[in-house]
Image (tube, rainbow, N blue to C red; front, side, top):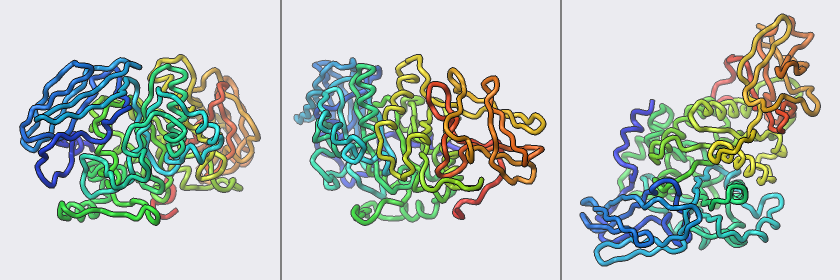
Length: 490
């Protein structure tokens, strides 16, 4: 499925309208940046055709050769966490100097409105902004823009404030408009792990995943061939323009080209992702897109299986009256399908959403993502996730369910009515009763004598009752694979 992605000829895909003649680095290289520790971070840019480019980090020099178009790429010496560096790049008598550069861990934070949702909007935002004063946290917001073709750099003209497109130290001014989830994640990692954290914020509300996917990732699936062919036929000089006050990008690869490509392959520790709401009417398609998206990013960054942490959509909308079908449930299931990929983890947020499409207590989301990273990346011996459905068996009139990630044990909280449902071969679901026995869940109903399937929290706004003793909620699940509504008909 991904052979076409692997054949991408180079990581630095961009369109040049003329041969570059002067030394230039993309905006992701600026004063105050964090460069990824424990690797030799990539560095790249433009210079004169076939020119020699000298990269110096605290007087350690390396020379690289530009190609005939002036493109060059190299690697920086491996930085130490917390150490301050200066980066000097010279070529043909030109010099670029970047100061207050520190080694640390860099995370890509992407998605739509819930990841874009700012600190100033979140619960407790005023206090967070007032307290923001930490040189160990560095923030970079990619200006919102779109393009028909992959770009070398972000668009300066798309900036909505002076702090976009440059690295900034965490301060009241830089934090207030920054992603609340990502900032709260960074704050906890810095506090707990004593390592500087940089966040690259690439978000745009109301955007579908196909806008964030590259052309090659979109072409690996059958859904947007016509649109992509139309784009490919356009002259290279054509520009894609949007009125950000009235519209959001919907075109495949448009966000990737203008916002993601300009930061590839800047050294990373991992990805944070919160998106999916805009793909609500095509939840089955989303599971293919999501997996293609993750694989494509990892291929392009060429840092192996970079950890990918994502938020499963929280509870929102109306409480269920009867068991039934719902697009949010299928979309959540599609999100969870990405867990079959290596080094992925999912934040189950059914218990911390507030029933709103945009939950306001973003600190809870950021800190749960941080706990996952602390467990998987930083090696803490902690439980950071809730029970996950593993298998089931039918025992007379009861279905017995076994879970992974049960921690120190399963526990039922709150009212379990209208949370679990059970069905027989007629596929008609009824609300079910549940008990825990020997750390397994038993589900049954007097209305179903020969049960075949169980569903848990299968609704847009379910109650949340199943946890492990560490306090993390179980992911919603179904034991059946019965066909639901087709995409586009929800």
